[in-house]
Image (cartoon, rainbow, N blue to C red; front, side):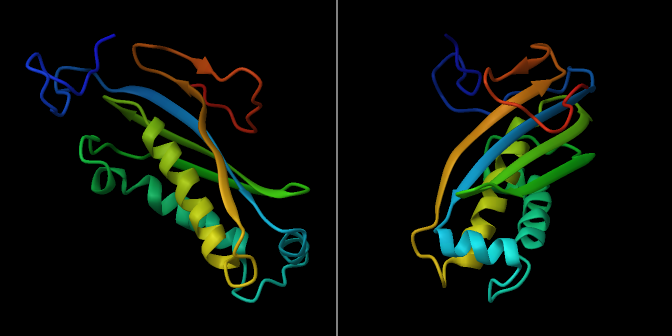
Length: 165
């Protein structure tokens, strides 16, 4: 297996995508924030002391998708043309599902993962005063489309938005 971020001498480099043609691409990811039953109830009632946790998580995730090259040193600066962050309350956790879209030379998997992780961090930040045990779990890519490798979906995971490019 050849790692694309290593050159022939084994040194780290940024992959050169100059010659690639832009194509429509999309990726979806998810994260969970496991919270205490009391916090889950407060989230359902909208009574968390810091305010609207779900709205803050959505905005944080969208903002994060656009900042990936600042956070990951080998990520390319690409146009994020669409970013969707859905936050839902499950019985024992907050489920965050993201989809990011572009028409560019490289994929948006890292943007989708970053959106999900920062949205999850925002949830933890908003509830940590009342639930220090809140934990982020299951951060993963659930689907991607476009580019040379085509469409891929993680078996056993449903997405609530299309990643068709």
